[in-house]
Length: 160
Ligand code: SME
Image (cartoon, rainbow, N blue to C red; front, side, top):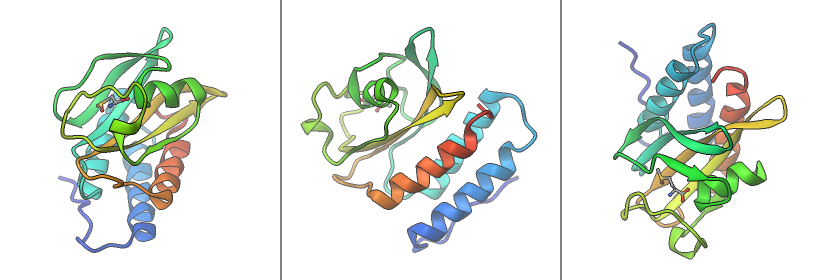
C-alpha cells in the first residue's frame, strides 16, 4: 500500500529528509500513538540500511516497556538507567554507542547487535518514549544519523 523504500545509495541528509516527510505524512491527524509508533518503526526499517532492530520503548509507570518494533523479539521491560535505552530515558539525552560491548550495563537482547542509537521522545518536558535503532555493524551510526533521528523524535512529540 505504501512504498517508501529509498534508493540504495541515498545520502544521509536526503534519506532523513525523506524519512521525516514520510513519518510526518503517516502520523498527521492520527491520534493513536501505537499506530503511529508501529508505522514509524516500519519506516525506519525500510529506510535504514544495516539495522537489525528498529522500534520504541515507552515510559510506563517509571520504567521502559517494549513498544512497536521491527526485528527479533526483545527484552520487555528496562529499568531507568539500565542499558543504552535506560540511560537515554534517565538522562533525556541521545545515546550514540559505537560498540555496545564497551557500554557498561548494555542489555544484549540480540547477541548480533554491535552498535546502537537511542533517542528520547519528549512531551511537555518529560521522556515519553525512546526510539531504539540497533545494528549488527560496529559504529554503524554517526552524527548525521543522530541529528536525523532527533528531528524525527521532535516531530513525534505529541503524536505517540
Ligand atoms: N540493547 C538495548 C536493549 C533493547 S534491545 O536492543 C531491542 C539496551 O541496552 O538498551
